[in-house]
Length: 143
Length: 247
Image 1 (spheres, each protein chain N blue to C red):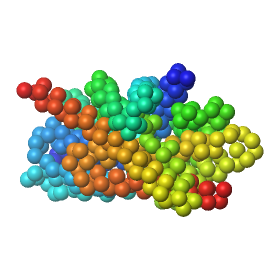
Image 2: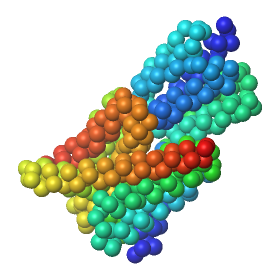
Image 3: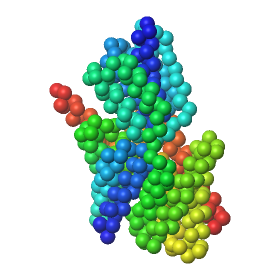
């Protein structure tokens, strides 16, 4: 079950790297970043953590790993982080929200949309936190 | 004077390629200023928005402006311009060499073959079904509808230069195919199949870039990219909504 999740998230993230035209030798790295982010997400969700918090931690981890890889290969960080955060995007929730909108069930739709919005915010916050830590380390290193 | 002009041209060309290939705005500005500095022009200004670049070298030459109409995602070009800029900074490339290499890069098509991109989005769609706790019996229908949806995106985008309509149509097409496949008995869970097959259309690149630009203080670029991401998500949602309304 877990293996299945890891393998599919690896393949999906690498496939996204290909769609975004990431250089061939870095495709597997994209897959790895996506897999590790997804692993953290499902681990947290499995232990009954809130999915918003799980998304935040996973996005943060994706960004940190991407930054490390970017420094190692001297490439822009986006290459790794983009395909890494795709699995975390709340596609399922947004879909459910849309379904409820269509049948005029706005109460449920707003609830779901708010949650999808919070999860998107958690992704953004994860990216921001890793950037903050990155800049702090740079400042300390240059002292 | 001629040399200053050529420096400005090299900076603008590098910036243009990066912006068209989907680099973050702050990275484009940073790269242009770095290139100018390594060619002996330490005081230059570059103002980049998703739709245009304004570049000036302090006290020398006219200010130049480039309009960017078409943007796509090509991270390979971003990487190559990045490494050219690094080589310029370390003094490995002369002005003429850098100009030549950027000109060559601009005309090149480095994208993976189209069938490979379709295959990738088809496989990704299938994998997303499994990741969202779907069953393996739904892998194949998501594979098919995801691939067809992505093909539709490209086809319509070439037909009409209206990105949002292409996205709307792609998610609509993916939904139709999913409904048809379930109707003839291939696959069970229509929800999972549709979610999986629209995932390749998700504006992941825009979301990350919007956040990173906002953080770097590029409010105009960050907000406009955020708006683009929102519109894309809205187009995808509308495409699905039409399916439900009919279904």
